[in-house]
Image (cartoon, rainbow, N blue to C red; front, top):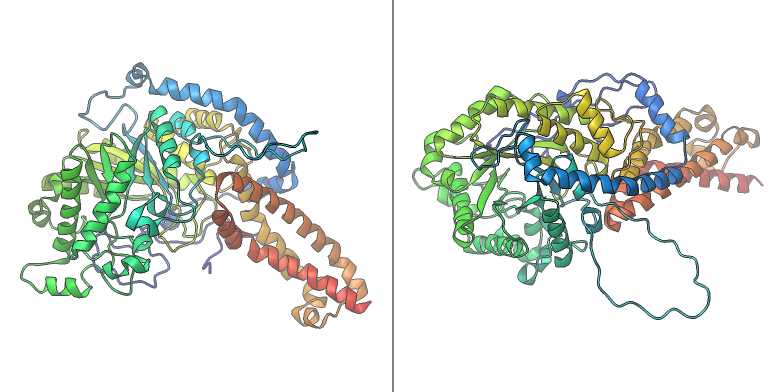
Length: 612
């Protein structure tokens, strides 16, 4: 259940519900608050944001609901997208030319991770453990198969041709991305003994190759991410691997003492590596290893002299990183840094880990501590790490069940990271990953869908690429997205776009702002409903014939309007997502209000028939 309403009703303040991003203690190896309402990655940072949108956003959003029909908006967006795609491809090719990079002030050597504007490597993180987009949304996928039975003679019957789905990778390249951080989880086509890890909607090997081929064609460097210690729910939830849990009752962390655990990790890495070519980095995860040290074997290990949970974590990291180095010597492992932060410098330096991996420092707050991050980088350098990565967020960091992306929060986060970069040695930064979390963990609900957050990643990429954000940069973002006016300080934007999935953003905005509020307005604040058609009346099919006419037309009309919007949204989502994603999003965000309205209309019909 949702603990707080994310969107205001008419007359309410536009200030979002407070959420605390600092309740996660960095480096805590004994995280015990399993019942916490905010269990993952310190992403609930909305309490740090400050904005005052007034009533203008509500008026602009209402225009979305009462203006042009969603079908016509969708058709216009698709038509405009066709015109725009050639421009995106041209801009992408232009940005990838060596002479263009030189003109922009980008270093061509390997000595520094900074260019004239900001970090030289900008990886967009695709979190595929929730709402993984169809491969055709990311890249052109050629399907081979039987052509089907011959068509009988006669006129061709009319058919509904599926609308073409524009691909998002060319847009990301045009916006300034230089690579992708692909977190496959259960969407990777694992085979053999690992086949149970593969979700029903997992990509096929051919689809993975098509996405990787498109990425190469766009000049996007790919870094795969496979969790190898914490966040192993997608593996350890299965009966076949449950015996490898650190704590028997919890599927989050891997037991680091078992040889079978190490064999499992190696098999996962090997299968992912087999589909990727010419990799330079491989992300092995290892963040938030909750309850580490509380398994029976770990408790016995910790009783030995000088053994600590920190050393246990470092030992497993060293094992995994050594495995990668021995099998793939040209590939450098990357790890999330939160478990490193609390480890003493002497322990960290003596572990040998700094010579094997590069830490990725993550913080998604709008007011992240710049000086604290600079000091953390200095600590890592003293311990022997030669390079570090940053990790910001363009979505999935302001609420576990967030539907819309507050761009302003994420823009501030990236501007703070630019300050960290400018105050750090130029040769220490390898790059930055713009994370886009789709779930807080394997079992949580969906955050903002990827198409909904495209404007956010566009703003953040352009800010990083240009070393800041200005009105001129905003105009460039609007041009690339096909939007006439892009809002950054509210959830709303009056402008339709031409970017891939823009119709989903438009319809999700309508549903998020107005479905629940409009249904509640009719059913809870209409005196004819609350006074003459209460649950008592509905149960006994009692209705006053005169009173009925005061709200029945409104209820039927409202239901009809929302059914049409939801139908359009479902059709748009099916172009981008698999059926399971559409079903989950609808059940979480649409059905509670729409079914309540439908039930009242049905009860009203039954009461009328009973009276007659």
